[in-house]
Length: 115
Image 1 (spheres, rainbow, N blue to C red):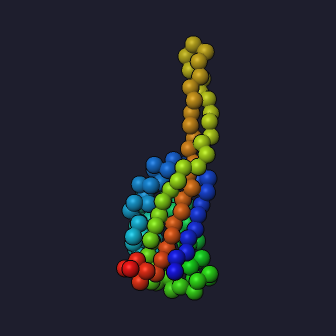
Image 2: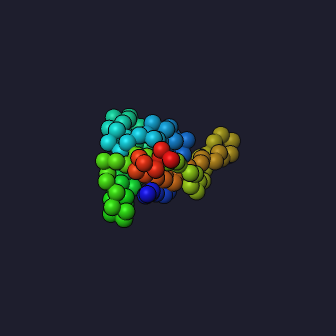
Image 3: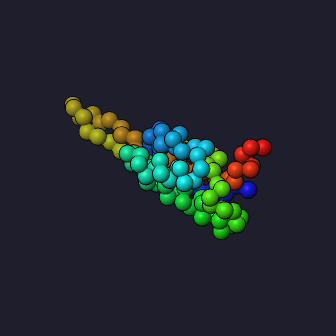
């Protein structure tokens, strides 16, 4: 069985979030939580929350054991971009793009990954 959780509109660029997701993809849940705890990146906190939510969904909805779960998929898609302007010299303006991310984590029991 697979369970997933999603956090949408996280105010950080998907490029930066994907760097942290690459660290935990394929790991067991306990190992992934330890890696996220000691990762010195801002994206680690929302990823940890999404991971805990996916584990809770697996336990509650599918009666899976949390000790046997691994991260089957972890990806960050691009959300809507907030567009702002910064004044520049000679009356011009430059666009500032404040990017957002949608973080999705899918957890699965280990037997299913081997197939």
